[in-house]
Image (cartoon, rainbow, N blue to C red; front, side, top):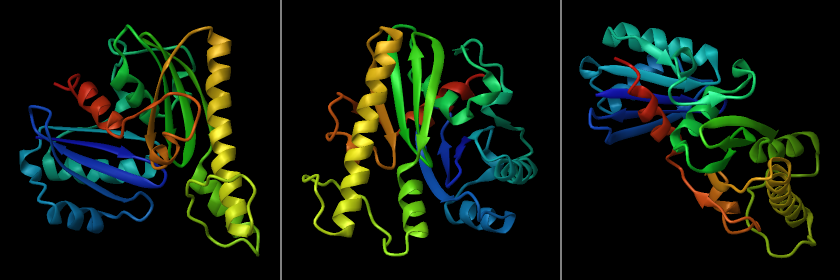
Length: 248
């Protein structure tokens, strides 16, 4: 049995995976509020039998949370707890940018899709909205834009008369009240941002791409942009499974 995980700025996901790479269980919790006690309760509640764990691997953009989980799991399982970027990934990916500057979640997503044949743009709606460009087996670079939810919350927090708003698909551009006006601005604004950035990537590279979208708002924008895309919410875990084969 393996423990594979993704520690993001907002949320941590942990999967229990069998030796045959079958996902047995998945749990989610807040990255900022985790403690040893809470982690112990969560794993026990979800029947994680730590004595049976053979491999532990995480991609993480929150060092503090990763170090806490690493110490806890290493002690409980007597196994090394690895972070993706601490492994030698040269057999899986070539990186054309400063390796230290690329989040291990983005490296993991890229490795998930890499097959040496196709070009991909991975659009991930997380705390930030990120675009990662993969050309054959090379990580070419990427773009980081403000996250949808983060931007929405920031506007509500700073503008006294704008309430907290759940983003929904909106057909009309011109809003008739504050809520519909904000929804329109964010929905059509991000739809335009997505299409424009993808077109600029194609123009700059002079290549065609398969576009994969993932993350919280991917379902909302899947059929609302001009670009043809495929939604894949399992991209990170598939990448982690692929990378975990490097651990002996």
